[in-house]
Length: 368
Ligand SMILES: Nc1ncnc2c1ncn2[C@@H]1O[C@H](COP(=O)(O)OP(=O)(O)O)[C@@H](O)[C@H]1O
Ligand SMILES: [Mg+2]
Image 1 (cartoon, rainbow, N blue to C red):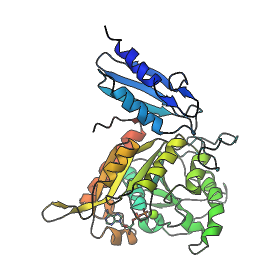
Image 2 (tube, protein in one colour; image 1 turned 90 degrees about the horizontal axis):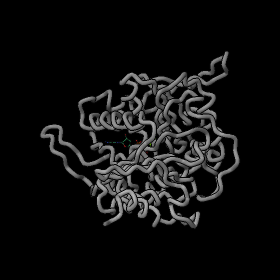
Image 3 (cartoon, protein in one colour; image 1 turned 90 degrees about the vertical axis):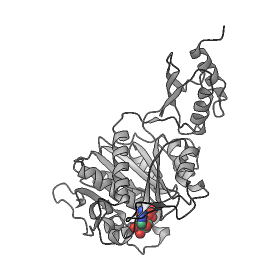
Image 4 (tube, rainbow, N blue to C red; image 1 turned 45 degrees about the vertical axis):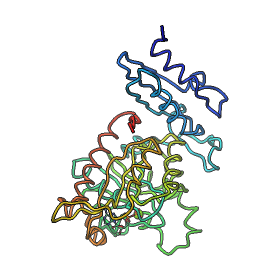
């Protein structure tokens, strides 16, 4: 008589070792709320500490899925220490003993979504701006923080360039507003041609200041357009408040998914779940015929999604005139709402909204 399903699932988890603790996942107490249903549906919470390798989650999923009789594996990743915290040290360094960062609720920011990418020029700001506009059009209170000090182009894309005012009573900075979205940009405060070496050290300070000293006025969603890669802005953000999730933008021709993958791993390491991948500039849809052409090598988004173990949340086609419109402060979602890119962006906004409103972000099963 073979062991019961739940015993076999437990055994599979007990065979995976955590290299950091010299222990297996079960004995290390990393698996919580393990539920094995008779019909083969398995769910559990994976307590992943910032210095645990995020690959453990994928390993656990693969091991459980390989158990005979398991039909579905649903894993919620949580940080055992509660709020995510990162350090400024090298990856894997001990978390600094800092006072707890204010929660995003305390800051009135609602759910914080980090938008990131491995490289620049893949459409991070395009997605951030259009996502914000789409959510605002849906009746949500939305803020966008442009933290890309190397290419702060959110103000240009939303056509808001005024120097932010300071409220004389509260001494807080007033965000600008466009298309119902409140926005602040490093580019509005930091000189564009200031040397990078000087800009680097002040990023931390400014990110914190943007979170605390800008009168956001109570938000449902706070979208952060981060610089590409895994630098100071990313770490400052996760140190300064809780980030609900990260979205990684990539392009189809990304052959080496290395940079984007490193970015995803960094978020996972600090306890920020990666919501999914968005592939931008995915082919071209002929407006006359509706036919889609692949212009570059394709599949970069799906490859990255598979590698990270998260869903591909959507693909946005190349859209003629999108760049020109963006340069004139007109997001494609507003300027050409029926265009394929706008339709794709709205669909992505819906998925993101739905997933962010769930309490824990479960990493869904990727069936290959
Ligand atoms: N789907 C698209 N179709 C056409 N042009 C696009 C598309 N997505 C982005 N662009 C343009 O490509 C350039 C880079 O996009 P941007 O969002 O600024 O990238 P990032 O913020 O990642 O550096 C911009 O000029 C933008 O208008
Ligand atoms: Mg940008």
